[in-house]
Length: 262
Image (cartoon, rainbow, N blue to C red):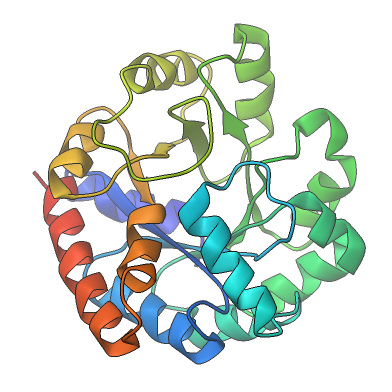
């Protein structure tokens, strides 16, 4: 299932899509699969499976802590395919990953194995189109979405080149800085979405900062998708009781889904 399928559905329903992010292997490998099922059951339209990485450049404290726990428990790159295979089929499943992990695995081999597991594509925060020749070829060969990022600091030329290389949707990084739930949504995000829309007909997903349904509703007023990560991770970081974390995640996802539907 590709991103376009989910966006066609949400567009027909007159609402934005809800995209939920969780690192694979957190809080455990089995519980990350359970958490993704909870996200889908309670209204997530697309899922981003994070690839835990020891040297993140974009992740804030919550996602760094989650990734560190997954890595300390022995998470390995190949296990992302187990997670994707376990949850694929109901909504599009993408992976957000730092490029070094894919390059180390082998670009074509990763694309092949990810597609075989039922994955829809990759979100690559530290890869720009000019340096993505191998990924563009592999994603074409294995029919995978490729999602690059634009930011408030991006020039018009950079936005045009980035969205032209995307397939599936465009990721609008709504704030300059690392990930993390914030008290208010970004004032720069609406303008960034407007600028990106001038160069593409692809859906624009907005990420970084959303923590509840009210903020999701704000972002859904101008974005095609609301991307939530740190608030989801915090459901588990703020309790040592994983079943309690699952319950908190169900409540949060329901709230977020209601927000994007307003």
